[in-house]
Image (cartoon, rainbow, N blue to C red; front, side):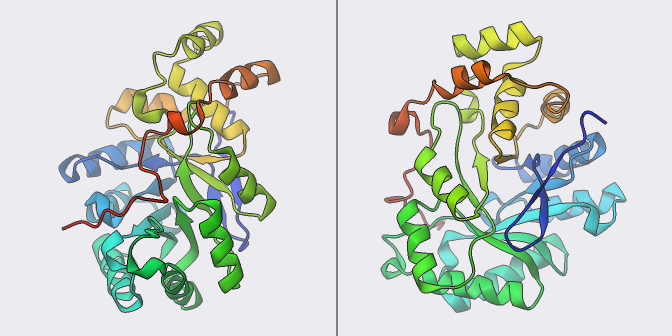
Length: 283
């Protein structure tokens, strides 16, 4: 029971498991097995995206698992190349077709792309509102939105994003965006929670892990959940997938939490692109 994953209640009344399994950079040919392993271990939250190229395999793994559809929380995201409303509608239909599902639990705008589409992500967001109204998306949210982007949505629309999925890890706390989310009822989802492995050799984290007889990844994931964020580590190694699931049978004390938080390097710690300038559109 100590490893039961808590649910986070979203601002639309839906709930999401706080710990999920991410499939970013897992090759399509490896995705069915990896997701199947995660589901066997007990994960019930899978995070994918059209741009990852493995939505179909995620859907296949869920079907093979024998679990009822409503037992698994599925997130996907809008491809950067389809922000215009009609394109977004077609892309969303393609996501449902790839997953072979009639609805998705959470659908996100993957990146704001403020230097593309004349800077218009508001019409894209209003299109996602359509998907929620017709029930094909239970919840809708955003990913990689900065405070200015969130404020623009708030000024132009009435539906508050259910989540904001952003880069967060000990080297990059992304505190300004997290604080905005807390103040406005937008839970943070932390992508790259172990900084794509960059924190695994950190001396402070290694010391803490040794003190607790845990892996560094377990310590860092525990830090995330105690801060209240939703997290979905990625691995294709069964042992690591299982280790990452076992983070609810121990706690970090306040001093240890602060030791980890103090590793923040600010903008210098960011591993991924800056959302203010990122403009990648797949060919």
